[in-house]
Image (cartoon, rainbow, N blue to C red; front, top):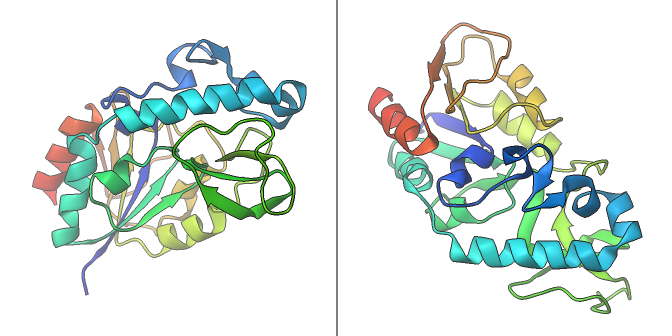
Length: 225
């Protein structure tokens, strides 16, 4: 049995692949107010704007490539049972070679009916107003917006509880409930925090801080493990 290595990743790991987040510029995401394009209220007020925004993000992700942090985590599968929990909606972990990826906040290459969170389809192109799901509902991005339930949090908690080693990469630990996942790490489990600027959080035993960008930090992590 390989030791279980559970990794929580945020926007910082994809930033080095050229994907920006709204946190880069005071609540603006690619020039949009985040609540206009990432909330149920924004959808109700201007669904076409929301569709256009995510159609653009989908193109951005298709153009981006996995970086050394993504491929480095995949390489760790040679020695560890690696489980990725990501707050990111891109597929760079999968394209980087990781076998087990749980997306907390949805996936840019999926869409779903406005009437059902279970009626999900793959999408590579644009979603247009008037595109309908099998139940007749308008199709929308399969993304968890601010104010919506994070349905994948329970499976994520289960993964964290079973971690032999826990790693946090490129997240500000400001978005909940994802930030609460640290509370479920078993006492004295070796925990590594990798970020350009280490966020403040409650310290635990066996905690190691690597204040570097994700690519450099993962390279150091590989050496340490």
